[in-house]
View (tube, rainbow, N blue to C red):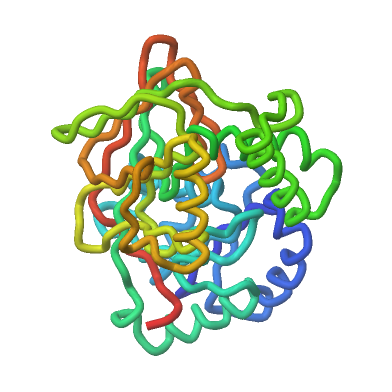
Length: 321
């Protein structure tokens, strides 16, 4: 039986280029049990099969959405019982936020080689606990698990980029830059919504025992990751609550936030329009309650709310001790 189980999603963006190399590597590595799925709906059966091999490490080779689907099934289905193996994530997909947080680098093959080395020498120094975000939208049969959620203007920008720019076949970085330019143009130049992600609607965000905020926000972020883009602070390893960041949709707040991110000073940022909080339940409601959790789009049922709560910590494998 393999000491490392590798779950691959060939449909993820990065695998279109890297999967042939990964297949060749695993074919020559007797310590790897490789299982491929063609759709996330197959992950339940895949994990049950993988569990029979009793792997020391479960490696996910797919985008953040594949990681989310796997974590959700592990949480609810418990294919490994009460003692699942630590989870490692290969760099893949369009954003790689989860892989970056775990120090997986940029080359999936090098990351896989490093995981094999760790499996042989000992896991103790590399296992790190991470709590997950449990999301319910009022309609789903069971909550979905993830690690990074974006809402408000951030969600509008992601959806605009996904539906308007990615289909043009542009390189990812070009699509991201254009989306940013259009989003800032809408705020600072007053460009009409039809030329960009849109101005967004009013949202209500409440944190249990901490109060409620209402208004228009350019960024709503909830994450359990420790390393997030643009030097924005992520989750706290020894805090069981979820971390929340809100930035109001005002020119002054956005300029100050951009300055803080650029010069890595968000850890001491305090200014009007910035709201930082932590809580064990966060509710998001409003006429445009769209959120993106690890690449997947969710929206509250009419008159309902997106409800976020933390889970118990899950063990992950961090490739740098």
